[in-house]
Amino acid sequence: MRTRLVLVASALSVGLVAMAVPAPAAMPVSTTRFAVSGILAGITVTSPTNAWAVGSTSTNILIAHWNGHSWQRVASRLPASYSRLVAVSASSARGVWAVGSISFSNGPLTERLTGAGWRRVPSPNPSGSTSVAGVATVTARNVWTVGGTSQATVIMHWNGKSWRRVPSPSPSPGSYLEAVASGSASNAWAVGNAGSSTLIVHWGGREWRQTPSPSMAGSPVLYGVAVTGPDNAWAVGGTVNTGKTLTMHWNGRSWKRIASPSPGFSTLQAVAATSARNAWAVGIAGTKPLILHWNGRTWRRVASPCPASYCPLYGVAGTSARNAWAVGYAGTKTLTLHWNGRRWS
Image (cartoon, rainbow, N blue to C red; front, top):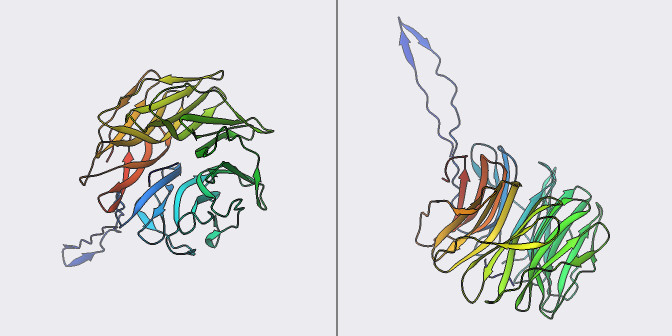
């Protein structure tokens, strides 16, 4: 089960032969940093001017929006205290869902962006303590969430009117799904763990089925998944006992483990892909942020800022080779990092 948890303006006046010239209009200055007390666990991006990040403060949920110039905290109707959001997904600028749990996993929390703002939408709670870890929006009438109870995986589907639970593989007691991603109505992947092995399940349009994944030692867990088409998907995570990163690739026929950097005691928490030659994976290496890039041939580590002594990254999303975001926290403050095609800042 998952362990992770100002616009500036200036005015000028110029005197010219006793005539006052009006000051030019103030221009907004872009600031990619969003630092408030709390943790950001998930992010979704639809364009360079639209992104949503979600997480939690010490007492409740946290939602922030990027408008192309700055991050702004967004109000939401708060459920019970100590609730949290862990994932967010968008099929369009307005088709956005965020998921998490209510007050120490006493039930799933699903929130939807509407014209009137964010509002909670009731969802099934099979065991009384269901938690939701991932969400994928295909269309306004086709949304998936994944998670589990203490005994089995849980997958729920939104049909445009209500949530309902659908059957999902649970190979062993304690099986849990950490993340879900969808490329189309007939192609979705969910990942997690089943006892001491990884768990990968696939939606082909009719039912969820378990797909074989490479076996390995070290208690491996998959925390993130991304898909761009029927023959290109990534799953990432790590080995709990040995602290090694884990990256797996779907080529349309089978899942294969791909070598990835593992500096120190490392794990990967999320992955995003925009093409077969552009993917990002993020996590933690010791106490520093870990960002890896896939260029179509190999995974390579990319330098990233860490404004505190401890900077884990939990979410990543992007729209192109020049626009990606990663989120987590630095010390006691939220952390947002942006890729502009040259560097993370």
